[in-house]
Every structure is written in structure tokens, then in C-alpha cells.
Figure 1: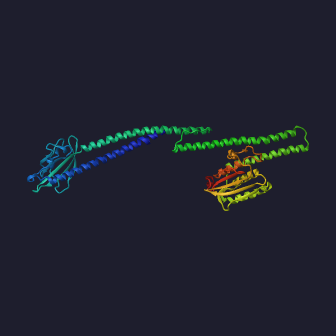
Figure 2: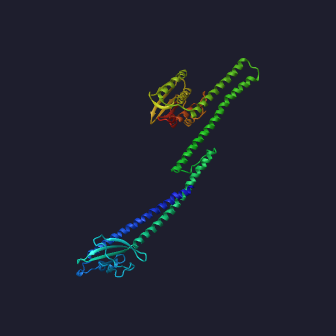
Figure 3: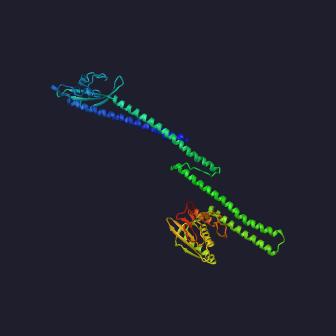
Length: 467
């Protein structure tokens, strides 16, 4: 069923039918309430008439309604009254000629000691009348039957007026709901259609998604926002992949070109043993460079997609081992490493990948710190997360490049060439991301740079599933 028809059905037709059903029940309750009110009025009038039938001069029987000073004012809605003797013969009635009332037959009073009897009469013309019959005893001991009739026409007219008004309002409400649901259906169809078209484009590999016009905060708006965010992430990942491939190709081209040049020069003419050895040594250097690059690429791929062994461990102990492993290289370079890590800091992590990320941070600090410098490694806990920071005394990182340094093969502008594949910090950020955290350069203007690896105190969904 189309969205428009579904909204018509559930947003207009069904509410209108439910309203009609409720109004039908309300109309019947309204009728019953009016009839009960009429019965109470008849009983009250019968009570008044029964106690005043014989209070006239000489205790002559009479009806109070006939002598009321308001008889002309109440005639249109006052009940009709009949008084019968014990044998059923009519003694008197009010009004003298009952207009539109059924012809009163002889009425023999029933159970003289019984309660008033309420019934509904239908006249030959189809009109309905409500009747009450009361037995009254005169001071002389004679029994009379007092019969009062009130037309139900006013009740019927009131109920009919109620139904006309209710049905008219229901029809108006149904029409308004139909218009509103039509407009809503068009708007929802347009928004959902835009999402469907975007999904079709995504399925075809087009990641230039734009749902900027839909700024709603409802569920559809949230779906659109989530789709925009997911598309942006996929687009960013694809662009990063393309940059990685391009940069990897560029990084591979240089050592391969140098190897080819060295080998071509060695083969171009007769070479001495020393010259051949030098050419082979140059080729070996480039092969080692290619090996480092391939190992780094493999490490990055493993950090992004490999299966990890999630366990709860001591972060401080892991940092201690990493720092001890880097002390020899630090001493060779004339550097001091300071560690500040409280013992017993338990957190869920994959030990292998996290150790590699910390080693990369330490290696980066060792690479850029001048001789005689210091490296500070610190572990801190705050607001449900752990912060592993490594601060060096090197040249620092320009503010504009503090996020770009975590991209593969990125080189800081103006920095001296350093050994390495340029993937160390990219691996750090990928490890942090898979742990549910992040890696960034801490703000600061002092000498050196402080790189932070942020880890959550609770494991991500992947870690919960495997742990």
C-alpha cells in the first residue's frame, strides 16, 4: 500500500469512523439521559398533582395544571393530565382538548398499592409519548388514577440535532484530516524519495550524497542525518584509501627507480668488484626500505581489519614494558625517557596492537627529539577514559597539520627528511579507533609535540563480542 493511501486510511478514514462510532454511542447516552430527565419531571409533576387533587373548595377533585396562573406559558411543554375513576371512566383532563395526543381510552387503575408505572406510548401518527400512571386515594376513600403524558418529540429533536451537528463536524474533521494527511504524505514521500534516490546512488558507487535540504529532527530527519554521516565516512575512507594507494605507489616508485638506476649503471659496462658491490649495496638499501614499507602497510591493514584478542589488562604495565624496550635506542641518541603511570590501571584492550601503537608514538618521539632532549610518557584517567600521552622536545607540529600527521605518508612541511615509511601515526590512530577511542595532537605552544592516545574505560562493541 502506498504511503499516501496508508496515511489516508490510518490518519483520516479510521479516525473519522472511530469518531462516528463514539458519537453514535454518545447520542444514545444523550437520549437516555434526556428521557431520564423527562421521567423525573413527570414523577415530580405527578407527586405535586397527587397531593393537591382534593384541596379545592369542598374537596372537589381538580388538576393543578388547569388553574395555574402560568398555564399559557407552560402549555407548550407541560404534560397532559388525565384523571380516571376506579372503573376506568375519564373524570377530567388537561388540556380540555389534548392536541395531538392519543385518544384516551378507559383506564382502570392497576395495583393500588404499587409504585408509579412509567411506559412509552406510540400514537397513531407515530409520535412517541412518555406516560406515568399513579393511583391516588381521596379523603372519602375513593380511588382515582392519575395519568400524565409528555411528548418525546423534544427529546427526539434534540437527539437529531445532536447527530446532525456531530456528523457535520465529523465530516468537516475528516475532510481536514484528509487534506492534512495528503500534504503530510507528499512531504514524507518527497523526503523518503530523496533518501531512496541517495541509496540508489550509493549502490552505484556515487558517494556525492547531499540531503542538505532535509533539516528535520524527526525519525526521517535522523535517518537522513545518519545517512549523510555514514556517506561522509565512507567517502572519507574511500578518499583515504585512494590517497593511500597513490602515496604507496609514489613511495614504492622511488626505491624501485633507484634500484633500477643502480642496476642499469652496473650492467651498462664492465664493473670492478668494488663497483658491483657498491651497486648491490645500494640495491640492498632500497630493498630494506621496501621491506619496511611493506611491513608498515601490512601492520596498518592488520590494525584496521585483523582479529584482535580483547582482554582486560594493566595499562601501566604495558607502558612500562614499552618504555623499557625503547631505553636502549634513547640512550644511543642521548635522550632521557620519563614514565608516569600508576600501577594497577585496568582496561580492556588488545595487547599486541596497543603495544605497537605505543611503540610507534615512542619511535616518533625518538626520531624528532634532539640529542640531550627528554621524552615524557604519562598515563592518566579522566571522565571514563584513559589518556596515554607522549611528549618530546622536538621541533613540534604546526597547528594546521596537527590532524594531517595521522594520515598515511604525510610529511610535515619544512621538516628534515627522517627514516621511516610515514605510516606510524596512521597506525596509532587506527588502533585507537578500533579501541573506541582516538589519537590527536594535544593543544599547546611550547617546544616539542604531545601526542595523545585516548582509550575508553569500557570496551567497544567489537571487544564486548569477542571478550
